[in-house]
Length: 192
Image (cartoon, rainbow, N blue to C red; front, side, top):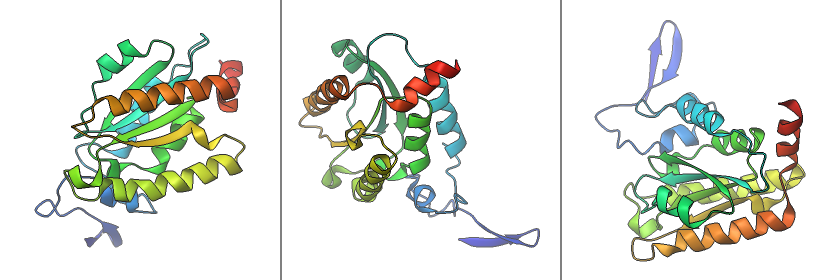
């Protein structure tokens, strides 16, 4: 809802109606709405904190995963040892904000994966439906910017198919090894 504070109109979240999904925050073009329990600033700081560009020959991949998707970060990291994997839990894939993904590439990640549940299993009803157009738009933006769109993927996993995330991640690692490091990663290594 919109309220007036100190002669300014601002967007606020009605705590009685809020489900906690974060879709309002990601949909707001002015970034005027934020999620009190997981502010955008905290997610962006976490991306920056985790973005130490590895000097080894493994791709750096950020995985943003829905809180309700059955993802086992520790097990995936152990099973896929030919990549540097960094996991960040978000409340829902509908909470996904373009800034999170762009910040990851700016910080030198070679790829970004979004793990989400299928729409029929979405806890908040609409997360994957909300996230898919954003991912598609960002893939076009990456391509226009000279980065391969394959560096960004969204995976609809399922509680009955827990290995779907592993298979998708294995495929991304293979693709990233073929196309090489992100051009932005090279810039990060020169600056440091």
